[in-house]
Image (cartoon, rainbow, N blue to C red; front, top):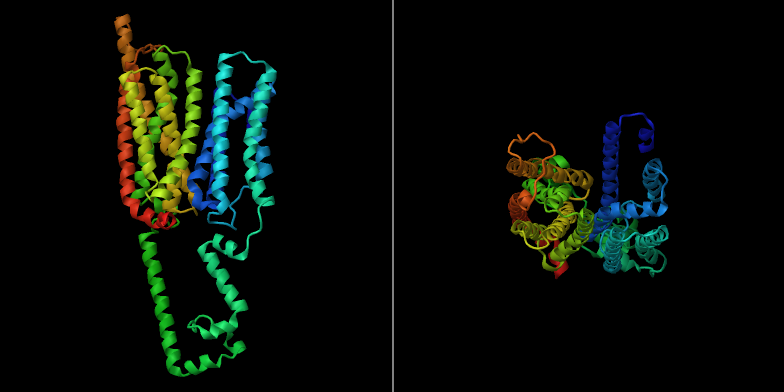
Length: 498
């Protein structure tokens, strides 16, 4: 699709807009397909799964940059061709592999060590990329060195494949009792009932489940004891029919009540059903304020460095990218520890992250040493952690059946927050102080000059102060959600702690 658009003689601006639209929608499709499939395959490890996948999304730009630098393309057309064909080849290769695994829906003994190995690879990969980026910015490396760095990078990316290979080819066979423990409760019940009906009919005559099992097998088993206990008279038949009708009526009434009130926490919600729940909107506006604040700082990092006279913009962008990755990976792990070991709601971790973001913004307001580094690390880490913590919490509160739709709706919170905080708050304050400084330098400037620049800490200190308050409000909303869902999480993860 991208190659076809690139061949048409569109104006450059129109072509750029179309390419951005197609590319971003394609990226969202990839995220949804991979994330939903993996979360459905490992529902009891949602934090690590979301953190690892979203973490690799944060590193994808830096990874592609290193791979393309290794290839050393002759022109931009070749670059567009590789970007268009490369993801399609990966999709065709793994389209039969990346899917929900129906066999195992509960945690296995090997899951913890497998996720820990992948976590280690992720941290090693982030540290390696950070070192390579710093070397490339400080030194003039030759092509052979860049190629060597890219080859090592590809090896690190492929290392997590060791986990499924070991599980498939080198793990010992499971006995039937262990396999039954790994099955979902409903499937285990059905398997158990089928085993009883198919292999153990002779044992059913000694139990009390006469109304469930013996009705289909009474003729084959000739259970005379059952016939003696339950004579075939009209009285018991009427009682059984009355009980069946009563149960059917109660079931219909319960279904009507459920349809009227909607599903409860932990059940499968549709988007329309979730949008009438207060929990959904509390989480959404917490994301609008928290993730929107982080994205506002990321979008204005260039102007922040310019206002302070710092030319190391590339270094700060790299710091934000790595911090974003660490936030996605660390947020998933931190939130999983909270719900597993402490039994607290997952959004406790989100409230802590938003409070830390507020501290980083206050550090910039005070104008202390290394303020750009601090705000880049804190905001990059906090912005990344939002997408591993909130998405895992949404899958727990609103179910997995329609998780793809809910996930894509929640991702609208980030651009919605940035649209207001960056497009209105930050830009308005920056333009105001730029015009004031221009009037002091040149009194006849009217403020219509598009090249006005703001200098000094004042350009973004007030903006950071406002964003710090916004992050505090976001943390307050997260704590409100924690209070509302603490009983649900206590029931959901209470048994795992004991």
